[in-house]
Image 1 (cartoon, helix red, strand yellow):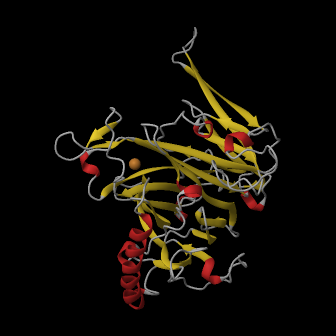
Image 2 (spheres, helix red, strand yellow):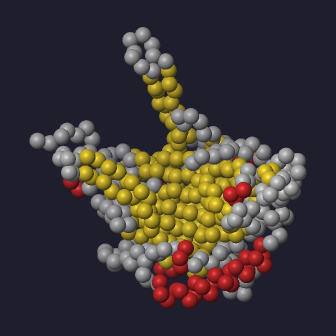
Image 3 (cartoon, helix red, strand yellow):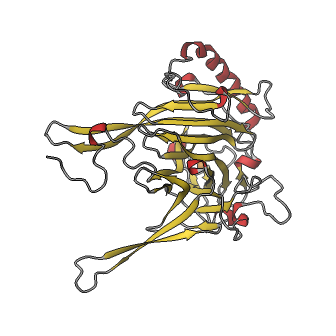
Length: 438
Ligand SMILES: [Cu+2]
C-alpha cells in the first residue's frame, strides 16, 4: 500500500500555505490572468465571479469557463467557450471537462490503484507557491469533506504561457514575414496520491485547440521496491532494490456542447492506401467517413481519426463546426475490460462519471465501468472518454524528484472558423482558392 499520504500531505500543505499567504499580497492582481480590461459586458456566465475563468490572450482569442472542485474527480471545468478575434459571439465547446480516472496496476499483480475513486486524488490537492504560477493567479479551492482543519487550498493556477511557433509565411517582399508565437491559457492543479504528485494541466490555446495532460512527478513509490521476480528495474547501487514497473492509465471525460447544443454527431474517418494501377503515377489514398450513431468502443489505428460535429453551428464558409480528437502517444493496457479501447463514446447519463469503479448507483445491472456503458444506445448526446496509457519502467533518473512524465491528448478545431483564427488582417482576404493580387 502507498501509506504515506495523510501526514505527508498535511505537513506539506501547511508549509506551502504559509509561503503562499505571505506572498499573496505582493502578487495579487499583477498577472495577465487578472489584468482584464473590462470592455463590453460579457454575457452572464453560469457561475459567480470566484468560479469564473476568463482570459483574453494577447493574440485576441478569449477563453471563458467556470470551475468547481469535485470530491473525487478534483478540478472540473464547465461551460467552456472560445471566442477568437473577429467572431462576434463566444462559441461554446464543452459542457464539462474532467478526469475520468487514473488507473495504476503494478506489473507483479500485487496491487492496482484507482486513484480518483479509491485513493483520494481530490483530497491530495496541494498548495501552490506563487513561483509555480508565474504571471498568473492562484485561486483558493475548498476541498469537499476535507481531512484538514482548513479545507481551503491555494491550489488552482490560471496563467498564460507561450506555445512556441504558431505560424510563419514569407510575404511578397524579402523583408516581409508573417509570423507569430502561440499563446495558451494554462489551468492546472497538483494532486498528491501516495508518493506521486499528479499535475493536471488544461491548455486553452489561442488557435482554438484544447490540450489536456496528466504529468506524474513526486517520488517513485517507496513501498514498491521489492520487484524480485523480473518485473522491475534496479534503482540505486547494484541490484538490491528494484522498483516495480507499473502502468498509469489516465481517462478524461468530455461532455461536448458545440454551439450550445449537446446533440453533437460523432464521425470516424479511415483512409486506405492502394498501389498504383495502370495509368497512375503514384499510390492512391481513399478516405471514407463512418457516421457513429450508436455507442462506441473505438481503437486508434493508422489513418484513423474521429471528430465531434456541431448539430447547429456553421462557420462563415457554411461548413459544420467540429472538433477533431487528437490522441497523444499511448500504451494501451489490455489487462482490464475498461482499458482495452482508446476511445469510448457513451450516451450521456449523469450517473456515469468515472471510467472504472464508478461510485454512483446507475441502476440495476448498469455496471461500474465505461466499457459496460457501451451497449448499443443511440447517441443523441455523446460523451467522450479518452484512455491514454503509460507503462512506467523506472530508471535511475527517476530520483529525485522524479521528472514529470506526461500523457494526454488534444481536441483541435476543424471548421470552427472560416480561416486560421490567428490570421493577420492583411491576409484576411486569402480564403478559399485565392490568387495573388496585382
Ligand atoms: Cu509511474
